[in-house]
Amino acid sequence: MAMAAVSAADQENSAVAVSNREGGGAFVLTCDHASAHIPRAYAGLGLPAADLQRHIAWDIGALGLAEQLSGLLDAPLLHPTVSRLLLDVNRDTDAHDSIVVTSEDTVIRGNHSIDTIERQHRRDWIYAPYHREIETVVAARIAARKPTAMISIHSFTPVFKGVPRRWQVGVLSHRDRRMADPLLRALRADAGLEVGDNQPYAPRDGVYHTLERHAEAHGLPCVMLEIRNDLIRDTPGQLSWAERLAPLLLRAFEDVHAVEGAAARR
Image (cartoon, rainbow, N blue to C red; front, top):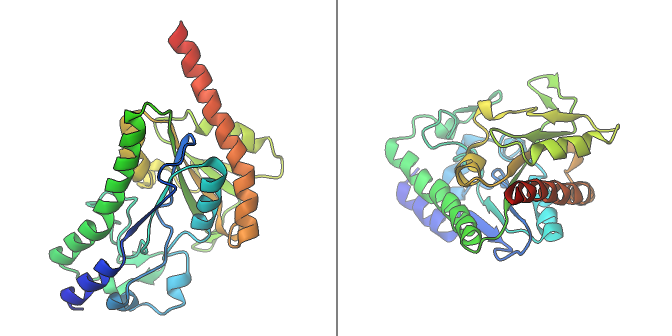
């Protein structure tokens, strides 16, 4: 694979998209695994086309859900435009799974034996501009003293390595549970939902990088939402879940500020 050809392809397509940048709502949304796209110069990383539509390449349905939420909440939405198989923006660049050589049971041949130049190229092309854009959006809101929470939208498979997952939705949090706890209570009020608390993943799995860097580091309330991907594969499912989640997110955010406002008045 010629680096010059890859670089030219990269320049034709920005690796980050920002929509509703000036959204006036309370939230900033990210969708770290929004895209399955791999530029032609990478030859699909040696994978057949069918594998590039599997969950190993992207979070199926997550971008559609995030776009619906962006509209309902008037929220900026930021996401990469290329597959996590090239580089996972939700990992520190030094993490072992920043660029994977195996995903689930699938060998990613195009990631074997890449040199330090190619590794740095992907960081500069994908990781750096994505996180720079998030920093810009968050910094502008902080400077304007606009109350803000960050929400990261993901999806997960119903079965992982042969093991069924019973949850329809997971609420993930780390040190800051200000958004997570009221969301868990609200979602669990629906007896028909199986709701995971730091399931099917948790920050200890290394999946909380974007929120740690851009929300927790600034003291902003934050939460990651994982929706089972068979529930949001199509537009009706995405809209249904957006309409379910949007009022719960707003209520949780209002609760956070009511508590903090009362504490400030003491």
